Image (cartoon, rainbow over all chains, first blue to last red; front, side, top):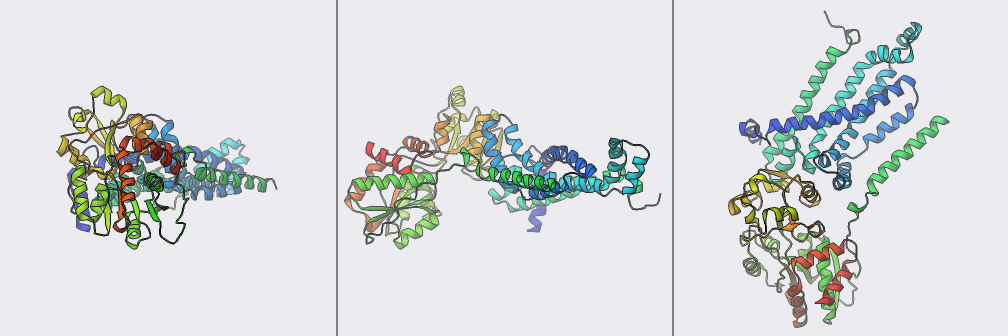
Length: 229
Length: 306
């Protein structure tokens, strides 16, 4: 079994072309990227607001749990059934999947941002206020930089989940690495199916690694565990 | 206090959203499961019990048989929506049902995995050979529920398409849509290529049912798609189901499968009359009606018009 999966993965003809692994991986990343962006656009402002003002904390915590309970595949089918007849062009096929993936990506970002801002050392906040910073300055110049490690971890965990789940887009005919899972299963090509699953996992880990590197460069060295310089 | 109110409101909102997402889907989810009326009335087990598989078309066909047999003076009861072929074949074996609407191609394959025929009469001949003695098929109808390649009316007009063979010169500029298994299955992309010489520019894997395929045809993502020949979407969207002159897709004529000891001259005559009147076109029309009316009423109307 492992040998056949490896054979599938290492066959160069499986990597090239419009339906090849590279093309599908890029499509997978494109869908995931748009979904992450949409999720961040919703979740970051809300997280900042709640973390900064402390208002609506209970609501937020409940909302995060509620969002996490949403079944992705169910939402996908409902969104597809409702939206397909009402939209034209490629959007009709992509929007349902993007809605599902963005919904899935919101809770980790929301809790990351909110928790990150919430755990900023009160002394730092007091100092900022003492220096005469406005509330807005406090948020952007003190709280957000201090919260970056947790904000990043929220974004990364969101991206991991989105990449892992973006396979379901293939159920409604879209591209992405999920194609290998769905098509492999439909055609009883289990090497392709297992290979596709490995690729999804590998892609998720790879992107998380990129996120980790990015985090190193963006987060203030003062906030990361001491490293020799 | 205020906070608690907000929480409650949000929880209520979340619940409402979830609920509406689950139940308020509207038309696409309003599937007519077929009525369950007329269970075996249990009058001594003497009546002919008509079963059906668990999909609307088969329920409708069972209702048609019931109406026709009832008119012929045969005492009938129905036991509908039994399940898949494995389930209702067991019912036929143990005598809990006596009659069920079947499809020649798939029934033949169920009984004999090595069956090879694809053309209607040849499939019917193979089926009769494969049937055990305790089961009989009566005459088959012209009506078929099988894989078909479908295009929009505009596409059919533009390229003057009537059969799958007509696609050959245009296929390189067309996208074909179908279930994912069409990629490798002979009765899919490979067969279309080998039998009809069709080289589509792309194959787009969609669903095995038809919702996505129908929308993809309407939205122009695909130019030709795989839809079952009696799907109401064909009539509703004015699609054209292309003929299959080379019988790539095995024939699936509607045929009554009946326990041999339940066959009487009256039963045989009534069911043969039904089969003689059933066409793919009128079955598809009835499938459209079944979407918002009782299959029993649609069946009644059809039998009265026979």
